[in-house]
Image 1: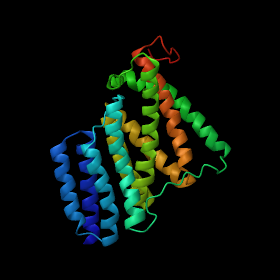
Image 2: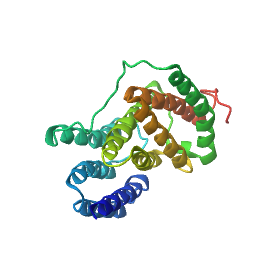
Image 3: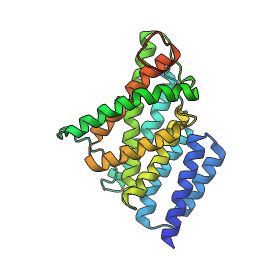
Length: 263
């Protein structure tokens, strides 16, 4: 019976994340999140303790203004929220639970294989064609503002890449790491992709962007499982983010970076 409540709690947690973070339906999302916590109380003790960490983080993201605004004030407010979402599970896991459930294995000294370099190159090529097409096809580029000036463009670049690093620290390392303790990797990876794509949908990847992000997050989870290196999956993500940065500039100001085929 406890296994039934575990899956029910997980289902409600995923649904609350979609509503609360992805669709910004605060009342409905928090109601489902609270119901999920109630069912969590009926679960196995270890499952209850571990999954409660994700519930806390989703609650924090639910009250965090998630937008593409790169003003200093918004960067401070949103930055504090997402740092808390990834930091609290880490601190509670280490200091209160006394385990290493939440940990960040960068493994930046590991040797990269030729196929890993080739994968990053292939990722860059696919992104070069896919991202500009997606932005123009859906009009999603209007979810980001691109203004002239070194100060703005620098903050814009840092913001995009900083969020890319955070995505991997939270969704791939923290959420997936917690889920893997209680179920097989394949299911855990499919579930973390729901959280990943919900966050980025609200951030600006609207239209059919959630399909693209869902598949990306599944692949990132698989690569992390195979390599055990956050440094490598972050490198992949930042490769995509650099192309996204340039594609967004091109979408708003085509003459600034005329390097894409889509106009």
